[in-house]
Image 1 (cartoon, rainbow, N blue to C red):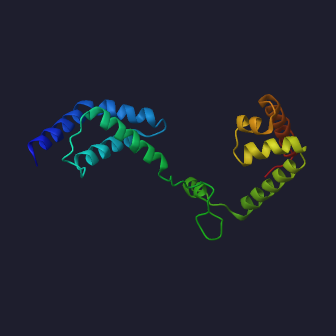
Image 2 (image 1 turned 90 degrees about the vertical axis):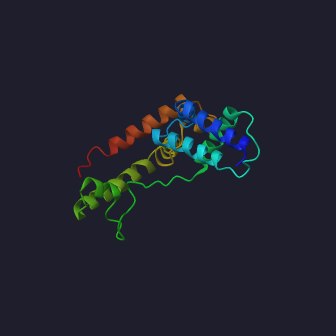
Image 3 (image 1 turned 60 degrees about the vertical axis):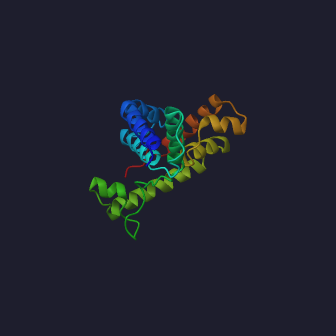
Length: 183
């Protein structure tokens, strides 16, 4: 290690020690929905990678600019990382009888409740099929496909208020058709 390198690493270490809270706050600003742990992990990861960089003979001229750009790049990598998501409705067994929600709640479905669920699904599907094409399209796109009204409004060139009204009328008809259903 050369004298210049030791000074460079020492200045980087001092910078991270002095600016730790600001760096974590910066990462949290970039990642709105991240847990506190993610921000600290990203800062720590960047510090480690800077201190163990292979081009150690090239001095860092502006430590703060280098660190903040490194943090920004690491956050971009964080967003690119695939997220593993498990649906509560996914089956845990081969028979598709026990879902994660059931396992967490401690209630395993019995044949009667599964039959009631199946009947409810069938009746909801029939009720949606009975809607006008305009109402059905809005209900399916927002409730089934998870689309936003603003996206639909732009794509279909229909005002958001009109889409909201269509969905409200459609959902009222679906609720009305399910009124006599008692599982």
